[in-house]
Length: 147
Image (cartoon, rainbow, N blue to C red):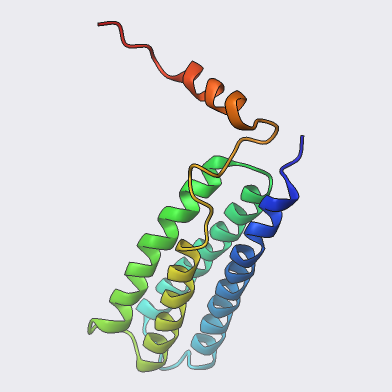
């Protein structure tokens, strides 16, 4: 059974923000390429890593639309930790130029915005299971405690 239309509607802004994030990464690499003679290797390495993480976040978004719980958990962690990392790059002194710090600040806003609208763990269900059936399925997987 396919995930509900409500889940697709709930994830639409999340996937939209992930596409914005990929666009910011591509623009960052474009600017780094245009300024390639003055860009340090740290700019290239960070830009490439950020693009790969953004593509993985987009993959997680597509898997969330199919009802995959692992994708939700990974996207939530990446959004929170990545947002903190972007804020660190934007605020702390380091080998990055001012134009990259501004872009990293914009990406921090996108990542922190991504962390908020992701569906709560309790409302994210397994496709085809609702209410008591889902709770029973979870209870059956838990080890029993014999005291």
